Amino acid sequence: MEIHTTASWPARDDRRAALVWLAIFWMFVGVGFGFDLHNYFHEQPPVPRIVHVHAIATPLWLLIATALVLMVETGNVRFHRRFGWFAAGYAALVVIIAPWSELSWQALNLKTPGSLPPQFLSIAFSGVICMTILLPCGVLMRRNSAAHRRVLILATICISDAGFARMVGLFLPAPTTFIGTYLFYEGGNLLLILLMFLWDWKRNRIMKQFLWGAFLVTAVGLAATGLYFNETWKEITRSWLEGWTF
Image (cartoon, rainbow, N blue to C red; front, side, top):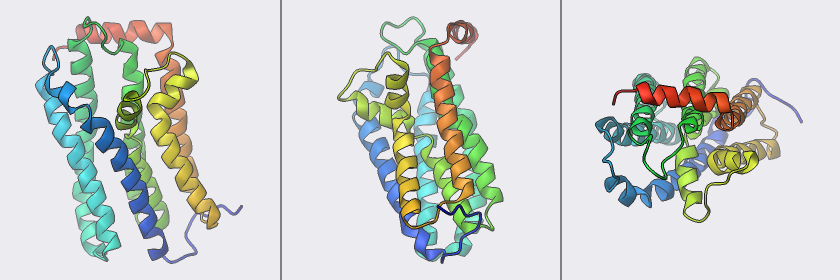
């Protein structure tokens, strides 16, 4: 198996694959959050305002990312490049809003029966951490279109864990084992990474940048799951939430 750092194939041969990954990602998000909307609007206590901001800002970012892919697919590469800078700046805003929203919601529900435990913050933050690293890396690779495309797709799908977990949660209760918890929350990322790898492997297009990005998403997800079961982390996150004002 040959591992590439730059593409030896036409850029147009890569384009439609990105639409496939985004379509699967949107399925996770649409099904998971779609069926959870009723619970969201009827939560007790009502969610903090920042959560509503997050509920608007994050889907908007996903729409922007999808639009960027569609621009390339339809040949609007010049506008893609210009709009991409706005998208990168907007993503930086999402990176701030997402953890703020999670901290506020979990702090509010710290003593609510059946709510997520404090240590869940590690899993909640894992996608944002990956996005924070992968997004600027992908932007810096913009002159290497094949690597740029793959790393930015990873930066987008790495936050699929919430939608995927909600979708799986429609059929199964949350597991209590390490592997079960990892697959329950991070399985969407893992599935998309595996499909991307197999697609490129079959066409001899495996790229080193993609492998490093995939390793990052997988490693952060495993580390986050490990922290979820760590007693010291449980105490740290509880103290954070007890001191958080929302």
